Picture 1: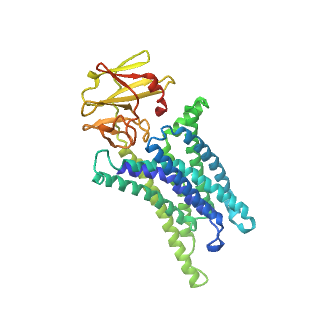
Picture 2: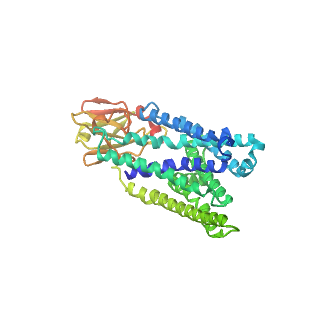
Picture 3: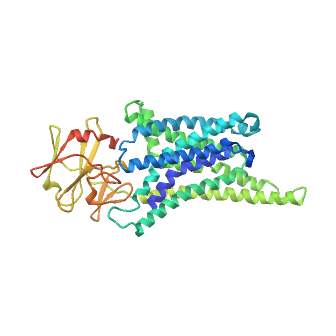
Length: 423
């Protein structure tokens, strides 16, 4: 449950905050006076969400086994739209003031916002959606207490991200404009940093760009601190939260007449509440993505790789080495330099389960053995032994091998072709 909660919260937080922030910055008019382009932002989210569902489904069914050809153009779009969105937020006050006089500018801003929301949503949500595929462990009944806990964790993670965004939105009328704008600009900078880091990582892995030492170290730092960036996206709203609380004390509870005095009192109460609840939301997100993640990442050490015969492009493992019914892990260095791992386990009935120490859903996190079960290190799902060697779900990526005279024989060219799973 906790793993589902923190994973979904981290994945959904960025698009939820971006949608909220751009809606606040670009909202104008009410009812019939509202421009049609105001609904483009919602359309952008729906398009991004639909695309994410399709992409996740293709990955779950192993139709797509290499994500790079989708992620690469997506990240370029994200980076470009982040820069454009930063520009429209800076100009948002000018665009929304007397917008009837320059409707084209508002429509253009809404179009850019819609594209940014669509790209960010499409980038962030596939991994969240794939969490739905691991509610039920292979071989278990559909409705179990573990399944219900995972479903609850998923729902609570999504609800936390959405509720936090809604709480931050309450400060739109209680904090001074510059404070909310500053927070939104910082949010976009963090989004750009996250997207650019992922893009740079792809460029580096595909050998399109070779970064100098200082830039490479900065890239490594960014890759290793994605969770901290997600927390920072929430913490930037401490600026309007503080401004909102200050305004709550600054506005006098008096006025030239009783009606105005009552409105001032109501504003003071609303401003303090908006700021205080926003601080509570930030603390909650921070605790969830630090302490909560730490609890889910209690170190699980993968067993060290075992020795095997490797000669003339053929890897050979004897039955005696892997016939005890336990998980055995092996390592291989592909022709392109990628260090790969594969696993072998003897299944019930005497057959052998052979596959990469990686899956299409969770990448190269690997598997470990616990209480007689094979567990995915990333999503903590138990793998049905009978399905190891077959495609789908969180199963190890299968590959071709041969059985000859008490030995498992693997052509290294087969492993070389699968090195992208460890990049």
